[in-house]
Length: 235
Figure 1 (cartoon, helix red, strand yellow):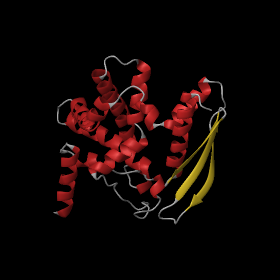
Figure 2: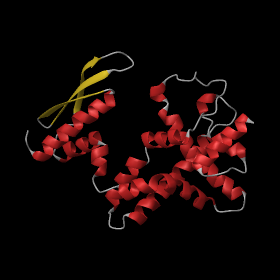
Figure 3: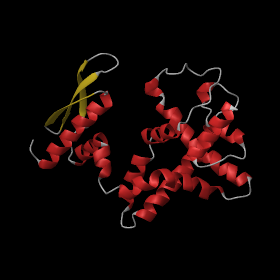
């Protein structure tokens, strides 16, 4: 009873009620669980469906954008971090099996299995509809639009530079003939449950620092400041 209610709640949040719940179970089964059937094949199909649906959204909503801008926005939206956030919003829980790690283990590596499961879910929805004699793509597209349409509408050309300062800094360095940015961890302080990272980046004669609770965030802060100085030409 409880499991059925939980499953129904998840399907409600997802926006699709499965006729074949074996597809749902498979979509949520990572290879690491050690079950007979995992979600790798579904993930393969779901990745293509997701790319198509997000591309279609961007193409329709931003008719004036050129290919390069559309590709950068798609790359920003279709990434492990974004898909993990979607999975978290839905309350997605991976199916556990004999090889599943203990709950709470390896939190830093948990993003990809969640992201893979989201892609597998889209494939499962597609196949579930097809099995009922209905086209699967509209159902999958509706789920993608429900989650991403607002983000696509709010996007502007250059938003990826604000979101992904490290990649943008590397691209600018290459364009200007500089070696790739070099990041150095200067200090890690604070307790384990609330660490603080201090990072330095050097590129093209610019040296900037960033401080944040995670190494990635500290690097991003340093990269963002380096970008600002390079654009202003104040170095």
